[in-house]
Image (cartoon, rainbow, N blue to C red; front, side, top):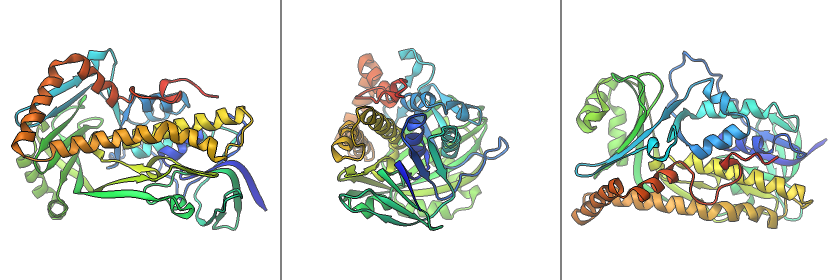
Length: 405
């Protein structure tokens, strides 16, 4: 027997689950395929190493589809201030300056995923298949995409959504090309216990070897991101936690405060990827399947959630118009909404990264001048803040807090 759906979403992570929630309550029949469920949350658990800085636009999306309480009722750390500095330049952004209570929220990725998965299961038109294994993806032009599962079931749909991450099997199977390059840097994520109580600031300091960043977590915990060469990151990973703590104290700025203990570490390479197209007939890519971005300003998850909101909007509006939602002309509406916006964000992050991650004197003078101007020219400063909050550019309805069903 073949199960027929309107939309099959491969990947039940944050972005895939957000697409499903955006389609929740509609006439579209949706399946979400996820290989394994996330671990259930308990308040006594230590923080996960994988966290994201959710923007105001991301909050709007998650709140409008009804999943925000699932985050708040678990664990969340709002932040009001964001500081960017180096030896001779410094600027600080504060949500009070533009009359917002927060600039964003530090949330563990698993908590965001759990909240969205809980919500999508409340919709009668969505079927979550988890755990599951995909044995084969069948794709031929002129035919609806099919998924063969490990248990023998076959699913087909008008639209196959690839929300299956940077190594997307959907993208590879349908033959969408990829433009990519490595930044020749790795990032070390360090989970710490500090002397400070819960903080409301995230900061980033720039040195020639790469940025150093702090993300506040609930209680007296924090997450550090240390960018450096692959060799140096590998060296740091081999140290005992006590020795790594001494390296932190020597390398990080005084505003970090006293580190009581290192509780966990992880590392990853910095790679930029961008799909050469987001769509084919009956197939569409979202999130990391379509793009990975320099994590410098923590925008990867945020632009992925904007993808999810835009795709849900396009599919629902096309369905209401009586159009074939799998037709490439419909799916290109989504690509038009998101591809250039994502490319702009990727380019801004690359420019920022290249300008700040070196010690060439003329460049250093220019960036110090830029930080000084940003501190004094308020309209420009406010625009930067709104951009970091996801409130600039062409926004999907969900990102504005407008329900689309």
